[in-house]
Amino acid sequence: MTRSRTRRPAAVYAVLQAVTVMLALWLSKHFQVARLAATLVALAPPCPAPT
Image (cartoon, rainbow, N blue to C red; front, side):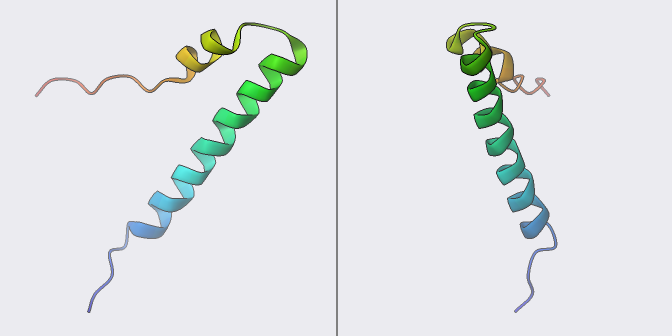
C-alpha cells in the first residue's frame, strides 16, 4: 500500500489556513479595525480560473 506524498503537506496547509483565518478575525475584533464580515470576505480564496 503506497501513501500519497501530498497528504501531510496538504494537512499542514489546511491547518495553517485555519489558524490564519481565526487570527485575522480575532485581530479585527480586538482592534476594531473592520467588521468581521468584511474581514472574512477579504480572506475568501479567489474562484479558480475557467479552463
